[in-house]
Amino acid sequence: MAASIVKRVSRVKKLNVSHISARYKLLTGSRHFSTSKQWNKALVLGVYENESTDSIDFTGTARKFDEKADGKISQLLLTVKKPLKCGKTRTLHAVVPEFSSVLVTCIGKRGEGYDELETVDKGRESIRAAVAKAVLQLRELGENEIEVDSCGDTEASAEGCHLALFSYDDLKAEKSRKPAVRISCATRYSQDKNSMEKEWRKGAILAEGQNLSRRLMEMPANLLTPTKFAEIVKEQLADKCEVLVRDKDWAESMKMGSFLSVARGSVEPPVFLEIEYKGRQSDSPLALVGKGVTFDTGGISIKPSQGMDAMRGDMGGAACVAGSLLSVSKLQLPVHVKAFIPLCENMPSGSATKPGDVVTAMNGKTIQVDNTDAEGRLILADALCYSEQFNPSLILDMATLTGAIDVALGEGAAGVFTNSENMWNKLQKASVRSGDRVWRMPLFNHYTKKITECQLADLNNIGGSRSGGACTAAAFLKEFVNNKNWLHLDIAGVMSNSGDVAYLGKGMSGRPTRTVIEFINMISKETKN
Ligand code: BES
Ligand code: ZN
Ligand code: ZN
Image (tube, rainbow, N blue to C red; front, side):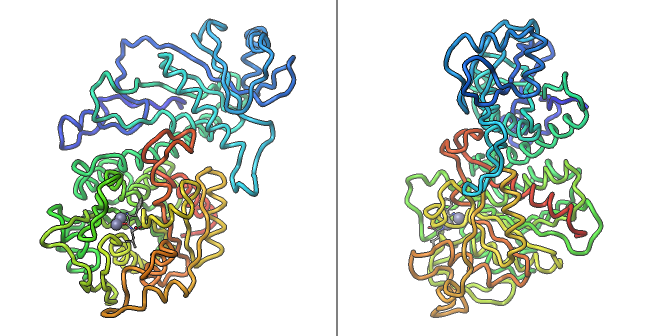
């Protein structure tokens, strides 16, 4: 199987908005290839950090390349005194005939692995960051065909490259867009090319899922309405999943009064997506639920205008569900997944819900909406109730739910609220591998009391004070879940990347898509769901 992932423009399915549709492609580095293109080939090689000034500690692959080049690479590297440090690179030109550039990137100390305090596999993270930096530097130099060292962890290397090369420039003029780059794994001196290709493909697919999430999150809200989101998901997933697009009438017939109370302020009709991937026969699917607010103005409790553009990413939970399903289905994981995505805009208008209004959720609970900006929990309440009807073995919801989780954890980790120690351990393990971290938060009764103290209804949609805002939001959701394996991920803090994650670049992050895929992968191996 070819190691490189290339899709040509002609293979891209069109969207309705014609001038945008021609530009809408899903794989980074996959665009604007022409058959007459001259390839400028480059090679990325990894080295470990090494104090010695007279030897280079190459990765297995890099050592073989150096041997084949009669030691020229090591000689050139040793012409300068200072050894390479983790995250630093050195670029050599015209060392070997097939490559115009050989970029040597330092992947940290040999043997680095799980770091308990950091709760991450440092070795894998360093590889992702090191190859990411390498391919971006080579793209800057105009190289467009790059072979990359597996660096001892092919999957992590593929993830780093494919995530780094993503850029959302579909709406920009051709000349301002990043050039396409073809990347592949440097397998030529490998003992087991097949398994290396397989690992590379897995890493590329993991990144592809996250890149779909990023693209959806980044898309402006005038283009990505609930209807458009559903269309794109259909395009992306329909060949491997069943995608049902439910309308407002359906939501009304299901008595989803809480979801509909958010949608009613907008002229854009709400959509409820139901997606099924059946990689295995079972009657207890794994349920994914994602908040799909395609734009959150706050409604009548309107947000300040500064930074409001970021609220186009308030469908990050929905995007991560779609991205995860893309990868799960492409990897053909033996698992049964059902996904539930309520989609709507939160707008102020004459028909919008007003503070103090009381609405009724699908399970009959009444909710006093004291703040229309706490809308995520309202749409999730009905989606969670609905998901329970399918006898799920577990429910995992993701939502850009609260500013409070950003205050607590920032971009460091997604906040996880769960009633299951077992599920928590699995999710954390998955995040150690993916490098996209999670941190457990409490579901105490203390917080439930804050939202059950309500003047007019069973529940209030806000906790009364700003304190513990992420916890009161989670406590609210808990009122709509009976499942014993429930995980709620508040992903508002990790919604965008300000530069903290070296291999992601600035912008909407698509986090924690890869953690969720890894989690589903683990579950698929362990259980018969
Ligand atoms: N979508 C926001 C949360 C958010 C904040 C997401 C920052 C991404 C970045 C959510 O709907 C919201 O507005 N929550 C309110 C709740 C409050 C009114 C109780 C918040 O966090 O301020
Ligand atoms: Zn809001
Ligand atoms: Zn919101």
